[in-house]
Length: 282
Image 1 (cartoon, rainbow, N blue to C red):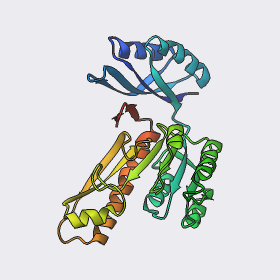
Image 2 (spheres, one colour):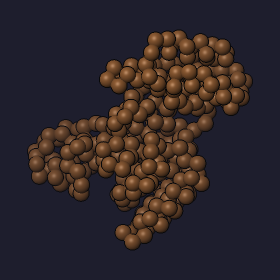
Image 3 (tube, rainbow, N blue to C red):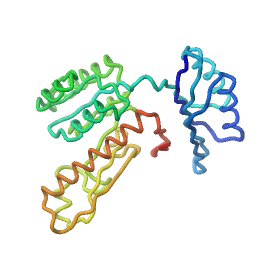
Image 4 (cartoon, helix red, strand yellow):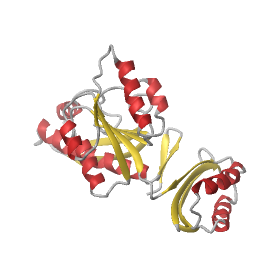
């Protein structure tokens, strides 16, 4: 039986890495279907993503062999079978446009996800969750119970085996502790083209300043608020005739599209973190 895998790696750059990786896969009977690489001359790091088909059905044996090989290059790496969709938990508050968009794309077969649960600090979207047959967890969050609420949230994330947590307009700041636990696997959508108009009511701020561009930013969550590595951004042109409501509606469309692209790339293992930046093999 043929199994298709995706291998991602990063390591200090040196001569012969591509040749060595290709040779290893050849020895294992792997047929490379897609490959991309990037040399970061600023950091001296090498990044690579390889999709390959292999007759070896024993993924653990393949991982063990690759792990021994990767040590000689001091590689950080991940190996995933493409047949396994990424277990995902979505967190949301009162604005559901991104949640609704992700659920629709998932059920339409456009995102390789397995959405295991929706977690919210409000009850608004329990019916939407039920319509997609996804468990809905209402966990209220206040300044007095934040630690206990986050403990419950993390318990759900762990119980569902979530490889990805999507903050689909979840309007609570995660603690440094939870950010650390979710490092590299939590994606947030920010309602502006960072770093402009941070904080509440960004479209009111934008309208008051008479902007000509509005945008959205999808990034990984870190303890530094809205400073995590950026995965995707986009903008939409506006003019003086647009009302706050127009800007909000157009902004929500942009947010949904930007988040969907970021989630898709992450779930296809196309995003590699490079310090404060990302390398994306589209």
